Length: 348
Image (cartoon, rainbow, N blue to C red; front, side, top):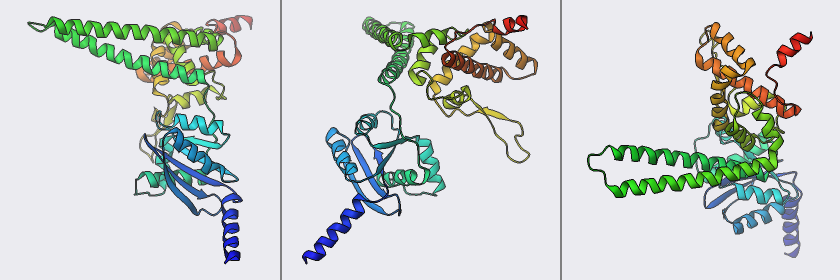
């Protein structure tokens, strides 16, 4: 009996502590984490459980992950519910991948998956990690996280202020408007204005302390103003993780992609729109100004219009040119010179 127990214990110890790699798929909800453990070498399922999405639950997950010699945790980005867990796992030095939900959706379609539960999602994440071998997650600097939060709050407060102003405008058109409604609406707008002022002041301070030089370089590009520079620094940082301007365009979804099938749709292209819509919109709005005031962008815009291209297509091309210009000045550390081509031509 003792020999059998000892043999069983050693077999279990070998299985759980010396296997090549264990994949842990983590499906994240507001209140709980569903875990699925997969043997990376054999593809056998080892364990499934659920823990709370709290500090205590995170500690249980850490103990479980550390009980294996080699582990790789895989989860998908879920708004804000995964951020604290990511921070704790990264601080513990564990291998972690955070994947785009669209990637997981396409992987599920490839598997012809029909079942959709939290438990099956955790299994799917573990399988994705084993088969696709996603890159390890790189934590975003704290200042970028804070700037992104502030940018999101500013956007939401602006929407609320616009809604209140529209409501006040409609209220003023009533035949007998109630004074109390007017007073409450005015107080709400003033309160939002004070909040926006505080957020923008803090945004200004953070950017100036962390990215003062980069901000000056970005705003040296004609057509790019303070709001766009703030947005770029909040969502893209110093562009350190991009090797080319084409990667930046693809990351924000402003890159043109072909849409062809057989003899239909030949030559048609649309932007991918797979990326940060906030940054994409910022560059598109800048293109409206750059097409008039930025020498290179204006030449590109006029050339495309003369070729019969639609207005939106020409502006998208200008937005891509702005991405290239912003990328170049940040990477080289040299401010934008609108007369660079003319000087080069005269020198020749």
